[in-house]
Length: 117
Length: 513
Image 1 (cartoon, rainbow over the protein chains, first blue to last red):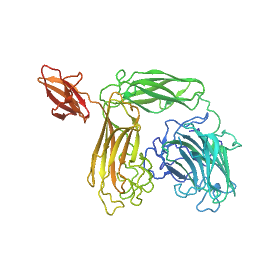
Image 2: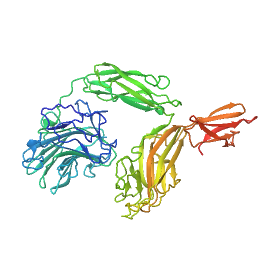
Image 3: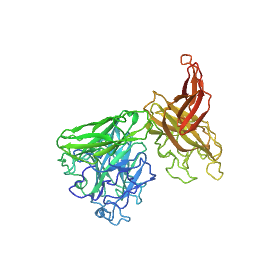
Image 4: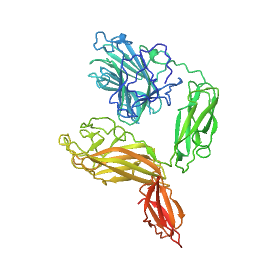
């Protein structure tokens, strides 16, 4: 995990800071989201996404610490709703119902750290 | 490895990505779209029909297994949406001037979303994901580029390590985190847990050292003794101490478990009784093997065929589609994390069932097919059960497959595997599997003593399937023959008594017929 030091605050942040072993399905935490993570057809298979800390991801010369997500062995789909009524209000298309992100003239940045095993 | 993991922005209102239509930050394998000269490259996928119907934009940054990357996506919303992907950008300042891949898209719904998600492909490989951030600016989603000016901490890579008793050594890993300033070191030592130094392992001490700027993991090894005692798994305490230049992190203490190889060990089988997924009786899943298992069989197309998960019913065909499978050997298999060890007895047990006919069910379940159960090492069959059981309608019978591995074996070290097959291509004839388990046990030692005018023999009762043989001559031609004496089982041992034959030598042995 890269050190969460940013010059400005993100609108949504998911550090996967739950206890090691926790399944992604139902995971809360982080900021800027409107629901827990949901894994489609979650069945408790050990290869589905779970939090771990055995070897934190590292990038360049940034420090590594904390937990991250490992899994996705075979056809796993996961999703989480973004809090369009909260932090993302300025990105919501005016008049959209249900609200969606994508207002003309705005810019959104999206980052993730990723590694294939 | 050709895994495909995608991060997606979805228009769907529900917590799924079934209606993802706008943009995916694709990573991994999109066939030729991600490949160039045999190398995979990070790829941006834009799906915004009709303008972009799965448009792939391959970057020049190769994908390397095990090497983390930062992937940053910028979406500028407008009448035309501009999408830029930056792979491993310089961080901490302004956004890089040149994206790794770009696409302008318009039409359709443009880029509108309310759900974030990701999915992986059916490639049987894992991925790691961390630090998902969304924000108004590059700075808001990227960490500062300042290097960590600190010597860092030193700790074990985990709190639990393990090694098999016959592995010879255990490898222990320590990590340096949160800084690489200066040269640092730490001492390591072992101490008795339930294992005893000198008997179970070799007491080990030493020092691990890191150079300035070095953040690589360091390892040390502990010699493990391979005894013949039947004992429980034992533990060795591991301790880091006396750090120089750095501080101790957590964990600085850990435990090494030495897995005994002399007793009976149950090997881990994923989804061994097919409890996942839970599907109601009378319904079926198609197009896939149950989780933990993979499809086996040449030319098999599982579309419209049925694998029912009650326990597991394996049907060769769907009455609605009478086309037979392309192979007469069809089923499912699983490769285990355990490997074939020498001087072990492997016993595979599987419940084999025959579902009773049900005229109201979508399948009739009449009759019972030819079947085969294989115990594998790599792709090699160690032992099989071919049609030894014929369970009546509505009944289960227990199949046992045994493989005895001597002091050497050509497949030693290869991954163990299990294969369950329906050998009939007739439609609607099922075999029902359940409760698959595999045990590894020791080769039995035959204890021999004389009591009066009889020879007393005993061996562990876990060593089933052996017969007691006797001979009076060990030079060629040897005259081994069944001992032909009664064997009783008490207190976990088989016992037999043979009369002493005066005036000649007597030899005894245990053999698998």
